[in-house]
Amino acid sequence: MRTRWSLLRRVRELPPVVADGLLAALLTAIALPMLFLPSPTFERLHTGFRDPGALAVLLTLCQTVPVAWRRRAPYAVLAATWAAATVHLALGFKPTFAEAAMVIAVYTVAAHRPRREAALAGILFGVGMVGYGLIAQAKYPAPFADSLQSWVLVFVQFAAAWFLGDLQKRRLAYMAKLEALNAQLAEEQELRSRFAVAEERGRIARELHDVVAHSVSVMVVQAGAARRTMATSPEQATTALGQIESTGRQALVELRRLLGLLRDGEGDPEKAAALAPQPSLEHLESLAASAREAGLAVEVSVEGDPRPLPAGVDLSAYRIVQEALTNSLKHAGRARADVRVRYGREALEVQVTDDGSGGPEAASGGAGLVVVAFGPDGELQVSNPPADGGHGLIGMRERVALFGGTLETGPRPGGGYRVAARLPLDNGHQ
Image 1 (cartoon, rainbow, N blue to C red):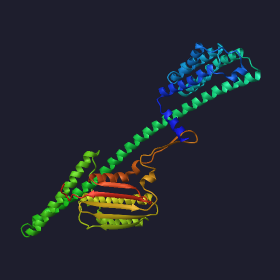
Image 2: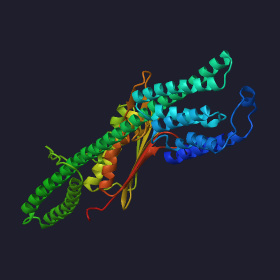
Image 3: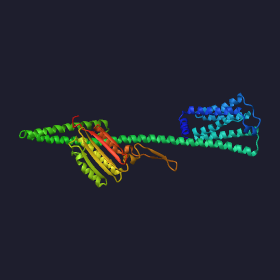
């Protein structure tokens, strides 16, 4: 069974010209031997068939060979097959399987031509088949009951071919409409994703702006203190100048990142109104407490020796944890979350895991998924979940990419969801 379906799939994947040529060859291979082989059924019902010769072979080929052009010239193929079959019958040659070419031609006209034109061609073909039947009745008389049965069977056969062709045409029209809708939805998703990235970059840029502005404010205060104590307390002034140098280096690093972000992004983010420092990992416990109050059991663990971090890294790590806990609250249901922060010599590692029922991708039905289906009334119904699981994962990726780090997100094997980020530490010496 599997081999047969595989063969059918390969045939459907053939180019139309090749497939139609093979169909014409198959009809010819079946019909030509029937001209010369004895047919007890036909000979018992009817007598007086002419002996086949070159003319019979030519008329048979005129019925089967045009099938190779059935999709390129359906009306001409229908007319040619009917004319050849009618002449074949009128000259008294034995009917063969070549008459199936007319059935294929009727199906093709209904499937590949506009409905009104196909209906008109079907009516004309029906009139032609009446003439074909009258010729058959005149040359090969039969009892009324047998003749009536033959007429009914012939017209039911061609009506079924026309109906199946029309059904295929409607299916192809729906498929074309689906492809157009999917292309449109994919374009809209791409635009939404780009807009989300630009929006998130603007938000990150505003936060980095605040970090740089706060660092400059600290430098101004320290410079003033150094100026006032230069004469009376040189050691204190030297310490203040060292702090100014360290703060200035970090501010330059953050400023370079900010400028790089703005060059890659679109638009100019607005200046922040306040110059207060942004949240950092020092506020991690308060963030966990807020999540607990919202109904999520959170455990926080810290590995390594906590130490001052570059302001941008500190802020981004906090935001990643914040977004991961927010996703757990939204999608995990009643769950438990573990937050682990590891201070390494070269990188800061942050991991947030939960044991809930799903993550952003599960909630959205899969990143980039477009669901298109037919409703009970035959109309198209389209559902278009947010791309990439929403803006949260986009924001995490942008923050990690800003520092040249890595981000891993996805369901855990035993259930739940995992977010793991690694942020390199340059300590201001970029």
